[in-house]
Length: 296
Image (tube, rainbow, N blue to C red):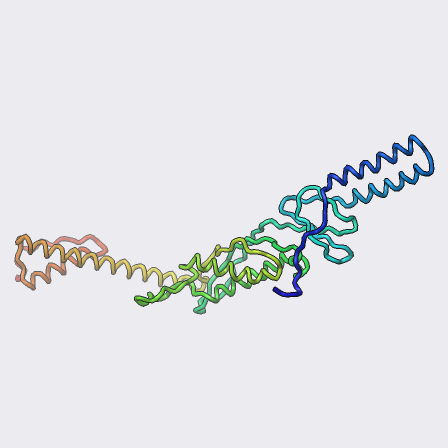
């Protein structure tokens, strides 16, 4: 950690209701004494009571749940109070309230290049909160603007570190490449880790971070879509052919085992051809009735 970094510490404060009761008592008691026994001493006690009441009431402030108050005396940091409810601290302290609730940030769609140089659109949602109020207030000029800038920079760097998708099938036995599209959990973990490293200077912790938008840029989206469609067609055709070959083999073996039909090589080739056409065709096969033999 940077030695010059600020560090939060507990500030000195007390229950505000006690000081409210003391302040009211310091007003009522001297007033009753002054009205009952008017004298110079009574006037002095009344003036002292008023000063004491002002001291008690001027130091009051209120904190909601998940809200903190930084206390400063003439520019010097005196601590942070995270207690909720009515509180009291030295009236000369300047109390700056800071929310420590979780906040959500949705980045804009950024147009960047992935690891392979393809232009893509990417956006992320980041949930963050202040962990160290002193760092967030004193070590950065504006922690909200700091979060926005660093989050955008982290998302851009993430896009440059991974490819959008696998363009080639992995070699058998090799580990599949992690991409923005397929490695959702790994990419989200990498994004959280980088954001935390960037937010540490401001005393901010990352609660969660995930990609909310991922797509090819419009100028190449059409081309990539056609490529994906072609890959899908090839994969489907490969599956169909593999299944058809198995069905043809099953049919030939069944006929041979039962002795229903004796076929020579030429007739087997013709039957295999016909069956493959029927099984692999995009349309229903139209039967042709032959009035001759296979040799006519």
